[in-house]
Image 1 (cartoon, rainbow, N blue to C red):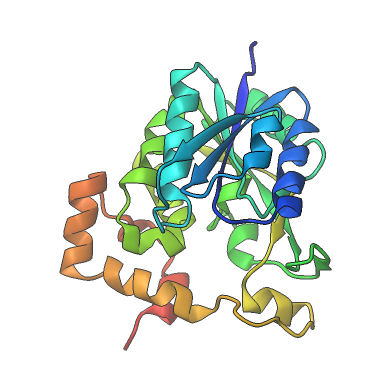
Image 2: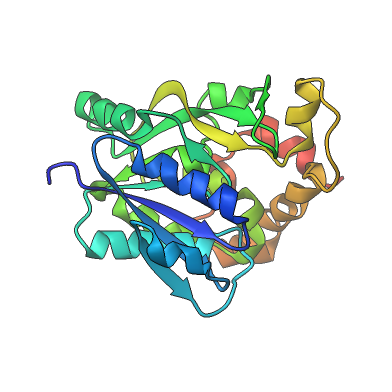
Length: 258
């Protein structure tokens, strides 16, 4: 198949309804898209009856899905997939998401194609929210990314980045794409549904946030580590580059501890 597409979904303990919604959104894409679900130490037996490929890791890794995401991507490359997309287990694709990315690739030949998001509550209700960095292509969520095989070197970044950086893994991934001079293009279409766990999206929408959501405290330790000698040395040793110089200063500075 000319446009052989695999979608990689790491999952942990998501409930059946959420996981099924994610999976069915992949099945409904055109052209036909194969789904690779990777259990991060907690396999769901229901998946064995689904139309997908199921990888089971022996234990969880606690790195925001990076290890299962990287393993799934490497398997897709080994099996000859031309394109690899990603979809977190609590999100879902809107209709024609994959088709729009493939069309973008045909127009641009960009090895990285991406989209924007719609924002949703934990229950799936639409939130009237946005992110300026996303609109300006300074941030691309993991679930919005599709790689051509020519960008396969990026598939290893998920597994190689220091675990401390996992709360900002998509930012690190984007920094890697810039470091390796890989062109990225965006449809600028909101074709991925993002189930938000971030307080700011609820506040933008004028909705009282539920408890246990993520805020500034979630990313500050990762950014502070990135700018320590250990963080710099770890990145150079594990990924062969330091992402800090590629991150937008207007995003970094508010998060760095004084």
